Image (cartoon, rainbow, N blue to C red; front, side, top):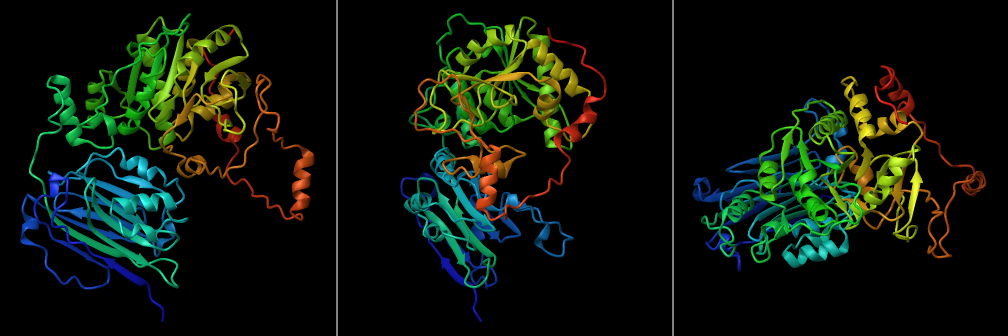
Length: 547
């Protein structure tokens, strides 16, 4: 009988060059699940300055434990007879960051889904400071393997097993010091089985003595706050870089004939590293005014509060609750809109941003030039800097704007009157699951359109909480969704050889014939949007009307 090919990679880490955290000798043990563990745990592992890391991984669960903390990743119901109730979106690669002096897990683990753009692994690792202990572990496998450039990158960092992650079925765990060397690594490859058996990895090391964070930084209150913040939190890249720290200098470039200087800016956030990356682009955009920015979060968040204190920006806790993520987000927007309309009585526009949006340098310039259109054209309800159908081979003119029946998403602006209607309408909904943007599109815009650019003015940096798989399929160079691209009547520089796809009746009929009549139709099992949301709009007319 064929069995899984079990490959055990063991590394003895005596010292790590150029990384102070592992200057003393350490012992490493790695073992495959199902086999005996022959050596005993060193007595020093029970002492405060020793760290024992244990990783167990399979398709059903992933578990990391230390003598300080633990991380459990599983969503199989205990009473289930098999793994059929597994949430497959939680499979994939997980990376846990451990502090090299305190031995505690730093923040939430990083998750890469099996079908996601794994090229982001390198981008993620670039945000981690040297000396941190990183533990990689696969829960399940990587459906399409790991891209070759990522495998090469991980090999250069010291991984011997990453080169074998080329297809389905493999399980892998790797303990590594950023900027240093491998501590331990284990890999299991299947033969006839669809999935390798579970694995176990254990590693013991001596923790580094406490040391001052970035002694080359200047003295002063801000830099002391930053030292404390960077010693406790991770994934901030240049913010915590010792040799080249981000100086957090906002732009001073003004907008001529500024029509949005009194606009109130809303930013809803709870994932702080994503917020930092977003704010870097917002603060460098021409026309940004930090005095009009308000940040909102649903519950008290210490890391967010400390970060915004560093940035010199205000934070408001909304204390909103809901058992539905979409409804909680909607309540967030209701609170935020009401708050800024009350605080900024002179605000004639409301601009809404989210924590994971990267804006272009001319983001506020685009909104400024759209302001007069919103003021004088009653057939418009918003200006949105995001175009869902903007791709390199379809969008060429950065000066062109379009009118479209578009959602308000990824960086948008509305008039004060429409913001008030949104807050009133969304606030009176019952405690059930609904999306604020879907409800606004189908029931509040009343046939009006949105001004959008031909070329993107914003880009989402992170996966969306409620749309993990769909978003990540669209992320990166491999667009797996077939969409129809609109023609731009305003563009005069579009290449002549760029054609516009239109799903006409003739094209659909030809596609059906080409498929030999075998095109499969999937029935829509959920209620259509209009049917799902109509009853929410039956509570009466809004108290405000547009001219």
